[in-house]
Length: 81
Image (cartoon, rainbow, N blue to C red; front, side, top):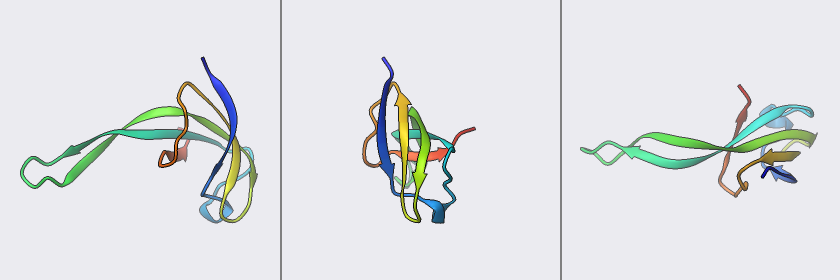
C-alpha cells in the first residue's frame, strides 16, 4: 500500500532544489567491498519512494512523499530520471 506524507529534507535552494521538482528517495541496502583492501567499491541502493517539493528555503525543502517504503534519516534524495 502506498503512503503519502509530508517530509523535510536538508537540501534547499542553495543546493538547487525548486518548488514543483520531483525527487527520488533511495536507501543503501548493501556496500560491496574490495576483498583485498576492505575499502568500499560500490553501494547498492533500493528505491524508497518519490518526493514532490512543495516549499523551499535556502537550507531545506518540504515535500509530499509517496511510495511503498518508509523514509528514514540517512536516505538519499536524487533528481528523478
